[in-house]
Length: 403
Image (tube, rainbow, N blue to C red; front, side, top):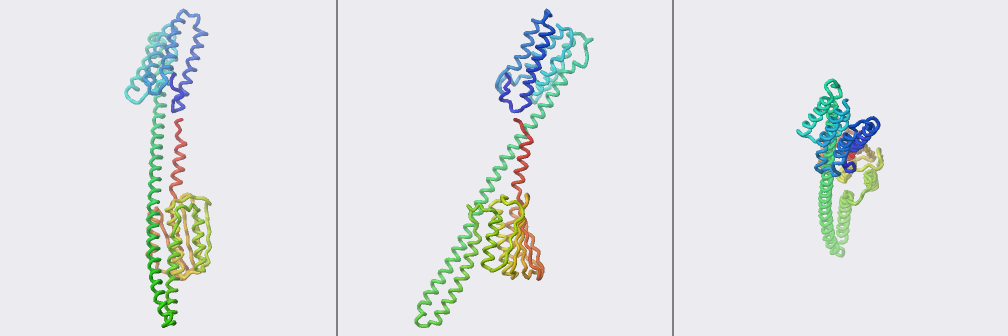
């Protein structure tokens, strides 16, 4: 039997099951109306041959008989139509549905058009067997229904090609995601190495200077206590400055295993900054609570916040800062607004240039608005395209179903 279970499209299964019903209907018709005719036992074997040989030609999709199913349908169903019309003396539309099934199972190429010619000629031969006075619209059965079958086959072929393209697109997208993850790992490794070098240089230089200074102060304790005290005070100032630098470096580190939400990470940085600088900071989060963003995007926004807070205090002398994180389906917007002195001629320094480069590398951007005595507003835009692309692919997958 044709491989109904192995078929990949519901149209094939429906066509095969309906074909069985089509032959059962004609068998009942013959049993009721033609059983008394003398030619009944002659056409009955032809009928079963037309029903069984094409339908039970094989059970594997790639078997020779299944591949030539349309030709078997043409030979045996066509022969039964011609002989049946000759013995019955009337034309029958028996070939209509077998021609439709043959068209659905036909393969692209010249053979398809030869089969179409064959299914178009058989009804004319049946009419010739009956007589030309029976010529009517019925003779287009083979031509018309086989053409419909070809149209259905072309739709299925186009659907399968679309499915293959979607699967290839999905595979390429997975490769891109894996590549992006590798880039993130490399970037994070470079970032950690840079911070490690900065910490090593800062701590090593400072501790060496302090140790040497303390050694010198120990010799001055007995001979010149006042000079020793000045030396200790100076070393204390150096250590305070070094502690501030080390603390800044540590605050810039984003733990790789930390899967905390972006809003929570930004709020912690703001709270720590407010505690150390005695600045009033208001933090507001707008949008979904659990929106995912890449590690590189998270680091970029953290850097932008740190640089903006530092500039607001160091250059703007602000004492109140408002931070707003707005997360939308297609982008994330981080806004830092301070009440500092601002400036009329805004220029991108080293820090802001670095922020701009980081954002542009992720297809984002930065906008800075500042006026004298009116504070500064820094807005960082970062698109979130991965989720939207994944949703579109999911919708496409649902729209094409070959199962």
